[in-house]
Length: 204
Image 1: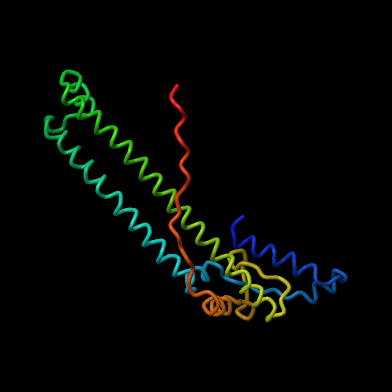
Image 2: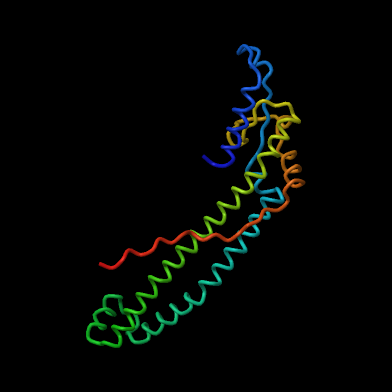
């Protein structure tokens, strides 16, 4: 369940238990408000702050990988230079069988490609974890804001606009949520995360 759905579920459960009445009375008294959470994430200062900081971290990760990518390009060009134009990978491997120096060159290139792909995969996982932790912090900051809007509006139910076919503007509290969120939490601390790497199994 996404953080936003969890927030709405908590609010709905808590609010639904406040009053005990007949089904008809509850239906008549129930007030529903709608919040466009996608727009809150996009337009709130905190949401924009996360997007900017995560983008910056992603750029730093890309720059860190660039030297290895450039080195692979150089190695690949060096291999291409010793083979006829249009030669296939199979032809290169066949030639390496009878040329120890070329065989070492091909082997080293293959090892470096695997290392680079592993580094790129770990970087992608780190970025995903960084983003997930940041949005969890955002959700924690958003919860009291949502509760405040519910309390001020007198609503018993708050739902995400993404799940609503139609909602009148009078029940859409998105702007109010953004204003309160901007005032309460204009920024979110975003710390670069690293996915724990499992140690390699001992050699048999």
